[in-house]
Image (tube, rainbow, N blue to C red; front, side, top):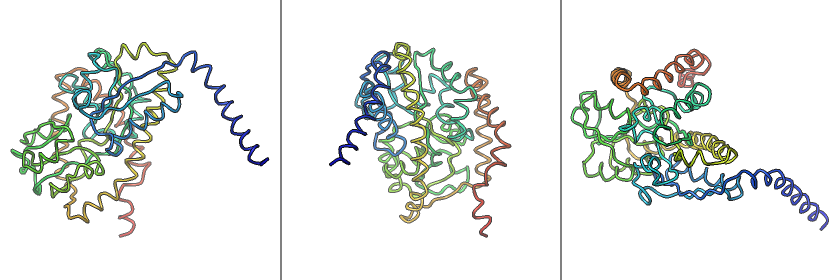
Length: 361
């Protein structure tokens, strides 16, 4: 009984001390927020969709319920691909999406979502936080009355699911393919007919032949969407999206009206969300690749010649886009300068990815 009482008193004292530390700031400076957060993809999708619900749960716990973000599934409040526009015009306070769906209006946005042959997730976070990325992000989006916060970065996407085998770039000619962002424009260089559809429509489009192929997300997400059931060929690596970056989009007027403490809590929790997302993504992909193979999927790696072709097409598109849009060129140059600066460390500081197969031969 005494032991139980000591445990109870110890727990109560600790809880009371924590409350004393938090309560004064909370009472004086923490805003009470009740935002609905529409998402571009289902909350059930691993790392891609379940990061924002995790962040929302942490915000409620940290703020003792003062910051209450309620997740809304795609299409329940606004169309799945209309988060940016809805936040910009004030129809909603905030939303969660992959950055790049708006690139027709904001070309540089696609680079923050994913840059072909660009920065991987850890490198992207380094660039964002320590090499000018966050400042450039604000410079790009604040004129549209939107304040985005990086709130989830995940591993490379698969390069594509195809109904038929790809033997060379000539097979892309006339192919109906779903792609998003800069990667889609690059694929069009090979004669593809590229379209953008939300994830929930892709299974049926592949099954009925509306699409001949698609890219969408991580192997685990592609599995959840059932692509292996309607497309026999999976190709890697995800050259078009070495990282996939999601953002909490907040209306700039709403953001500017928040207390500094509230802003800090949201930003810090989203930074934790980045760690959650990349760890969760990396934890699961190896097993699902094996499961595809066991179920009969032809899992293929693009040849060096194919990758070189993608890279040459990427240079063409990036030069064209950088020449036609000053901000696109500014962001891309910043990324590539950092990638170049990092190269000696990346190439010499880490073991080659295939080191194990080399030493075990």
